[in-house]
Image (cartoon, rainbow, N blue to C red; front, top):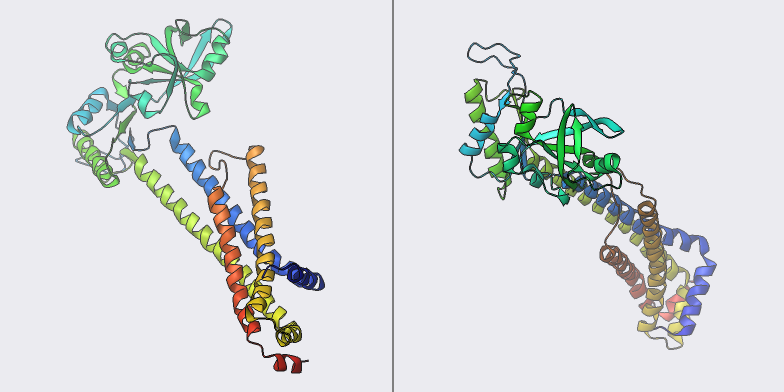
Length: 409
């Protein structure tokens, strides 16, 4: 089946029909190329989406107050709802299944920060100790905020590595004091975060900031971890939070503007489901393109058999077996498909590698790549499919009667 003479004949046949062979091979190679590129792009979108959520705890809920848009119990529309420390404690008490939880004061977060000759406006976020876990941050040196800082109203802060580099350069920031809007806060720790932009900020004890900056007991955001709750359970928690605060502040539970309850887990699931749909669509498009290439291989092999009918007849007349005829046609089919498939694979892989090397990505598109096993499996499948596509005309060629073949010319 793999005799040298057979290969020479195959190459001779390909040489005589360069354009037809090229177009057939191109359709197969293009199919693999498109499939790999689309899969890489799909993975790039998935990586980008996951990176957006990587900096925060995915299974969590954000609760923010707003203004009423529905009249309720004699209250006019446009009434501002303000959350307090007591609301946070109420939610924590009434919904014990919550995991990590923090409260933030998100208004007026930009503060004038000074250290020596360095100064600038930076985000200084008042928060609670659990904020560390919900942010998925990592302590680089020192420590994060603790309960003692809150209870004793300590003027301490934890700064991101990028912010520490700006103010302290090569100095050890631990123990140094930052002047934040006229009040000196002692640096007790530094942190790093998956999102680089979030390392240009500082965290302050919520109680201290409320006292120093006259925030009273107001908070603007509750960030509540859901632990191991399912999506359905997290939706129930969201509604329970709305129910509790709607009753306390006397606004309609259907008023989505009075209280914003953003279920990050539900959003994550929606995006992941959307990306799964995109991946499925990509596979469908890629497979359809491959099928078109396989059909092209089958068609060219039918033409090859038809053009070489007389030759096949002579071969059979001098004693060639049906298996050798089938092998000859299959070898040509597999050769064309293999070269085209691996060319498409290498071309697409090269482009994806180039994109990753030069760092063409954004917040929503990162590291487009395809698993090597998937890429090779797709290529081998197209080769096997090409062999199967050539099998039908090969069997037809093996059944040609020598006399009929000689009469056809």
